[in-house]
Image 1 (cartoon, rainbow, N blue to C red):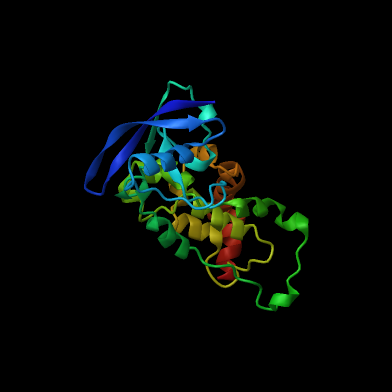
Image 2: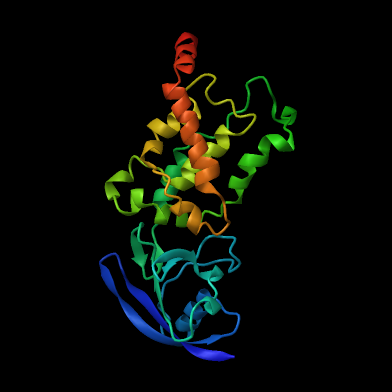
Length: 252
């Protein structure tokens, strides 16, 4: 069964733009990205939209649908009433390039600021040994497809542009947590450890664990409960626990 859907799509660039109303045919089983493609094919050939896999695995088609950060390819039309107006806008946290395409280079800058995995000095790559139970927790974070919806919804950077320099956002704090939980990561033996870096370099203290990042994650990663809160606990232990502070002072 097909019907005519009412889309309200943002058109514009860095200098400004507007929401325009479109009526687009929708068929059973389709997703919002299907209608955006049909709009390109029939009415707006110059509409800019980023996408790749259309299977919820590349993270390219991030946008805001009725004000909520979502993947267009994973938002089914059946979740809306047939007479509902569906508003599609670019991610608000990042600068618009054109229409629904944003400049997400902020995230790649932050990614480069996270120090890479550091293996123990006395082990060669072929000598790494880990048990599944040791990596069970951090393995969840590897499901991230870097859609940056968690970055988009995080109000610390969404509503406060001046925080972007000091705050890396939930996606990269989760990366720090993943490395901190890695059984072979030796960061901290000869230099600042990862919880300290998260606090001092990545703005961990600015996160107030509202769980909005978890709510929008298309991979259902428990970003707040399994990454951010444990990382905060470890940072607090290192900074405030008197025995740990005494041990570190003696070690240094």
